[in-house]
Length: 170
Image (cartoon, rainbow, N blue to C red; front, side, top):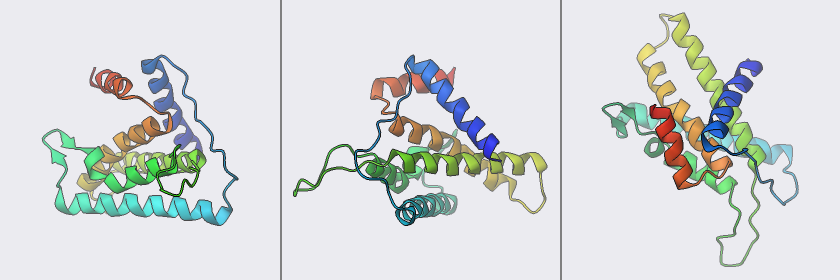
């Protein structure tokens, strides 16, 4: 499974780099490495946000458009959390230095890619115990969510994002 996850992320990163015509680089955080407990806490929070926002969207369908869900609106808390993990400038009044954690975001990407790999396998197997429609909905939201998180991690600018969207539409 780990190799399928790596392949999924590598394919998406390569496509992004090709369309943007630039290498994808992660600016590392300047702070001390996180303890294993803190890393686990951040990853658990991200997973919880993903599952909660996914379930809310499944219940309400609020962010669904004719051609599928509008992922950016379906996962506002999740994406805000990821942005918070990547902050480069302090936003508090006391001037507390920002402490970005791109390594956690990469772990979150592994989780999301794992969901995509699992969902694709479920859809291929057509197990009668699985809700195929729900798996298709989750896949249609999780795949673009990976791209949104990659865009945050690699600091994709608004014009670059337009190029990525145009390339995806072609």
